[in-house]
Amino acid sequence: MAKVKKQPRPKAETPKGFRDYFGHEVTERQEMLRQIAEVYSRYGFDALETSAVETVEALGKFLPDVDRPNEGVFGWEEEDSGWVALRYDMTAPLARVYAQFRNDLPTPYRRYAMGPVWRNEKPGPGRFRQFYQCDADTVGAPSVAADAEICAMLSDTLERVGIPRGDYIVRINNRKVLNGVMEVAGVLDPSDESKFEEERGIVLRAIDKLDRLGEDGVRALLGEGRKDDSGDFTKGAGLAAEQAVKIMRFVGAKEKISSAYADFMLRLEDARAANSSDDLEPEAQNLLHLVDDCDVGEPSWNDYAVSVLREIVETSEIGSEGVDELEEIANLLDAQGYGSDRIIIDPSVVRGLGYYTGPVYEAELTFEIFDEKGRKRQFGSVAGGGRYDDLVKRFTGQVVPATGVSIGVDRLLAALRAKGRIGQESARGPVVVTVMDKARMADYQLMVRELREAGIRAEVYLGNPKNFGNQLKYADKRNSPVAVIEGGDEAERGVIQIKDLILGAKLAEEATLEEWKDRPSQYEVPRGELVAKVREIMDLYS
Image 1: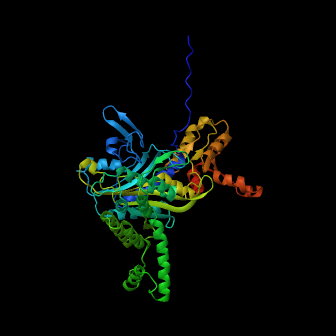
Image 2 (image 1 turned 90 degrees about the horizontal axis):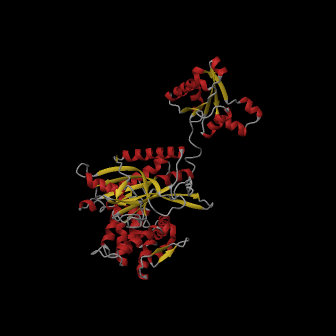
Image 3 (image 1 turned 90 degrees about the vertical axis):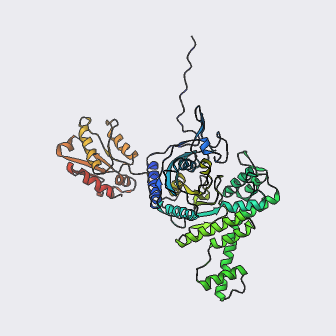
């Protein structure tokens, strides 16, 4: 008889591109979700929870970077309903929900949603296939006032979770501006938008990767394509040289705005110092007169960005409309106190997904961190969104205006950890009541009940109590602030021992023998003072 082959043991490892989260990591995320929800709710948005699975038909062609159901998402085929997939964002499910329940929902409909999303993409350092998003969207509001509100709310949210002004910038652009550039470059035909659709998609994704690939990388993707360090080849848009030049003019617009605006402000300062504007260019002279004669304040980065973008879109009607919308958003934000120190017009923001139709925005953290090789780099984007007026139309046949933002919670948490604002030490564990006598387990359980009823996290040691040292090692591993000890002698005398584990650890590391004797970390108190003494110790470290 043939010997039955023994099944190999499964490997205890997470799948590639996924990770597990423990104790304080989960607690930190829950706290951040609470803070974000607080801001969203204050702005009048209601919570919505949708299914984690959507039909691929409902997701449509708006998958990340691809438009096939077996790539970009985790999908499978159901016998009775065709292809379904785990949601890759919160926006596509919202479009389906609004179309399905539009007769029951208010218009505009303002909702926020929080939860995990899944993308079947190549993982990398800090880039996982499952991650949390916090979205807020307004459906049914055509005015760009809705876009301005989203940008203001994004700014407030970042500050609420612990990112101060100066450490972030919200950057806004308009897809219509880019469409105008593409029209000028001959990659968009306003009379037939289906023409050059594939090329436009590649151009959008290429520009969206400017920070990562640089101008040379973008230029390669506008042409035949590029090969990355791993040898993978990405097909390019195949544009002619003169077409690529017009696109790259747009790509370099941010640098032009930056240098030209800085130069303009220097000239303006010099002119004021000389009390003359004769040596300024005509545009600068006009702005100087506007500032000095009309008393409206100095022209900002956003004012100058608008003028540069008007030059780039040339005679394109759709491009000019996009610039007008950006100017209106900037004016609305400025009126509320959100100036270009927090929110700026930035042509480099395009967002990769194809469903955006108007304003797009992105929140970038501007401080530097060290990567795994010890090199300094900027942290980068933690949120993005925009206007997507055509997404609901796929279900209803009618244009439904919509705009919204998505915050990458895991990236935001990583940023706060990198700055030392959370995660300096693990969250405090529970008070541990040790077990000196297994026959008195009911007494120990009564102690933890008293602590819990007082709002103090507590547990009884439930391992093998034979070795008392192992119980204290367990408490250390749990990062417990206090251990409670009651043996037979203490029980007879009606007292308990309370051990301050935090102070004990510090004394063991730093104190001299004399200091250790003068500052005992263990106290004997009457049994009835259990809760009071534990609270007194914990208050020292709160």
